[in-house]
Length: 154
Image (cartoon, rainbow, N blue to C red):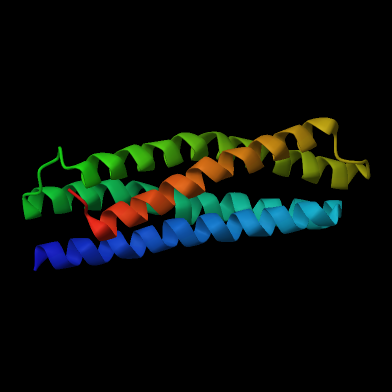
């Protein structure tokens, strides 16, 4: 029964992690495309909050529940699907940490530009490009993790 609860928590938190990631990325991307500084400032505020509350929390729950399931089920840690899942998760996390930093900086620049009634600085656009590029390996690696966790190939 413990395994079933751990699996439920793991699946639920992976849904929150992935869904929030896609949702916040779409939100900020669409706001950015409008070039409307007030919209960008508002969207980036909410994206930063959502990322910390939902992505950050589920990002901690994922490895805790995953390793607990491995232990309870007695899965060998050296299984390809487990090692691949851990690797994919680490890749996604290594992309997420700089993305959060970039989002905070972009939010601050948008809020400042809105307050000062000035255009967004060139650094905002550079950070947006980095943010956009970093999202792809995180997204792809999590898709691979989903595959490995459901298919469990040897």
